[in-house]
Length: 148
Image 1 (cartoon, helix red, strand yellow):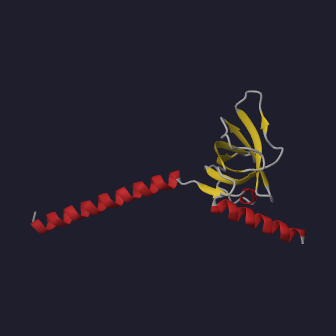
Image 2 (cartoon, one colour):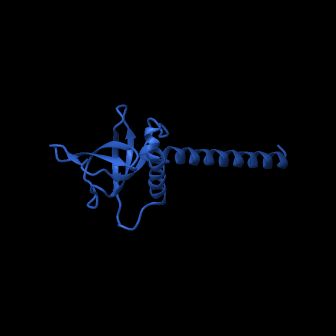
């Protein structure tokens, strides 16, 4: 085999390995990607079915109910326009309470109940993620439009 053919074979093999590595990285990234949705988007059917995603909003006042086992908690997340019931089994963050912001990660059950695997509470009165603030603003605007 000539030197030129060996070089072309080596470069071609290197490119093939690079393409395979990029494909594996993109595949892993796609599988671990978690999207954020508001309760209004979930009710509208814009949330992924059978995949993990996050819902953000406010914990609805009067919605926190603890089961007898001491670990299971049922509550509702709202963006002031729509409400999503949530079930979580585990320890809640100390700052988690009614009327405060929260982001929950999990999957949507066939009954419309969101089964959370992780609950994140808003950590500061003055801070709210940009996506959550935008979602709340959009929900308020939609509610005003409906009322008029």
